[in-house]
Image (cartoon, rainbow, N blue to C red; front, side):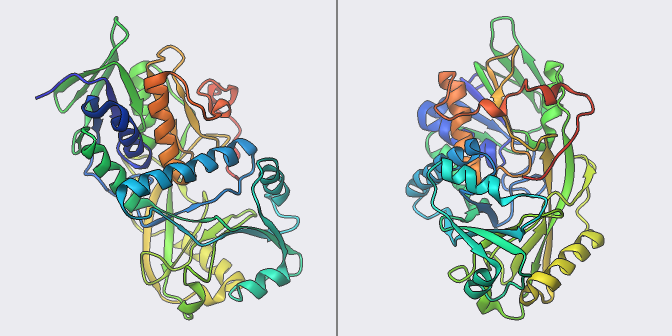
Length: 389
């Protein structure tokens, strides 16, 4: 059994599976991925059918990274043989005096050369009659918004990583990680010791468990979130070719999808869950959260309501500023780390590619300067938090 590799990836969820794939494209059999649960499990952050993908973002660095994300998904889709993104159009909407100003989104897209439309409430309701809006509402429409097919994307990254020669071990709990005097790293998993030159950490809510081996800890908050699938009373209004992905830009913030993956529409509150830990979380529905989502739909999207088809849970791993961590450790430049802050799946493939570039080349063409491990807010023990993006 092989024990030494050039690259080891810890965690094979959305970001880690992508990292294993992009590493294996260049390094083949010199890549080992380790996952503590079974591949495709539902205990983390990146399972289920769908995540929103969009070019609309509050800062230009995100918009530019999103452009490359679309390119990466296209490249993986071609090799996979089936699309992994479904374009439906994307709508950001809310009250003009809402807690999340749309002007930051329009300014960022304009600076990045991304086409979009500004719409008033009447035009939104004309195009998508399911919405019920007040006159003070407005929105931004970005035609390339859509659905990143999360479960399919993860499986595609994993299958293709294996095809390129990588070894992926699931059901394999990591016991110990250490930095060796020669600048390499050792990972002990289920009693077996593996060595590598470069280590990639994509452990999501278990990130601080890994960082503890390097005497580091980040001020992360893990929350247990839930999404609800409703069997709509008028499903024809929510077909993917007729209805966009959408985000209600206010506090609370809600988001939703056309019908995809289930015979129902998916809606959730963003960052509406309660703090938990990855090891103690439960999977039971939270009635208070469901009541908030239902009340929002009754007011703004009543035709989406119907019997609850399914409730699913997931985790967010939140940084205090809700920005990603995508960087190498200061004292250990051979260790690269990614934390998605609860909104990274649309970027999963490009984040995996960036992680591979950091590991192999020591640099990336993407601008990740805003996602540094050593930014001041991450050095505070009890930092102020802002989860609206």
